[in-house]
Image (tube, rainbow, N blue to C red; front, side, top):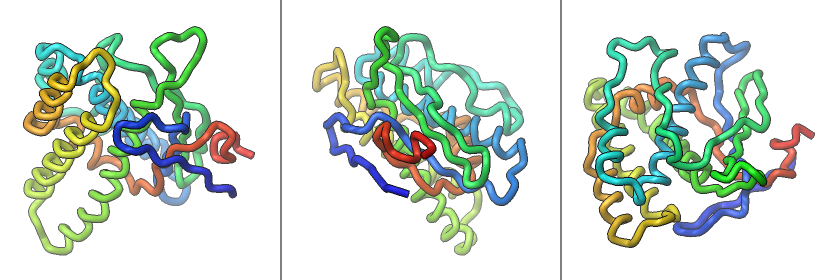
Length: 225
């Protein structure tokens, strides 16, 4: 299979238009496992979309994302499903999906202007970087487990990693209708504000992420050929 990827540099728009994600669900995955990982991926996608819009959002809307009430005692399949406010940024759509394990999904970002259909790439890049952080975290989590670090300490470290990665991403992403001061303020906001529990739940609920790569539309993983 041909491997075609495009790496995005900080502050630059990527030449790729699709995001390939591979998650190991084990042999003959249960439907519940697919549901749990789909919900977790949706929560990460929602966070990625918020990061794209953060520099141009009023402070009140920034706090809304972090402070809105979550449903208490949620089942794992119910976590991370709150929709993002309308108009924040482009939507992500499924181009192709393989139901076997590893579970493979190819995502595209549909631009704000639905006609004609175009791709902007910002949310895809943000989601890719968040998934790369998850891959790093999953390996580190194994090391922490071997060191018998308690669960709350592990969760606190995960939250800190997400805060740092979110702030870094805001600085890397293009921000429409935002000056440099607005971006710096948004970076500080992301670095200092607690990560929502449903996002932490989602990262912890994801099975092993094997790949998160930006690919071109003619890549065999996108076309299935």
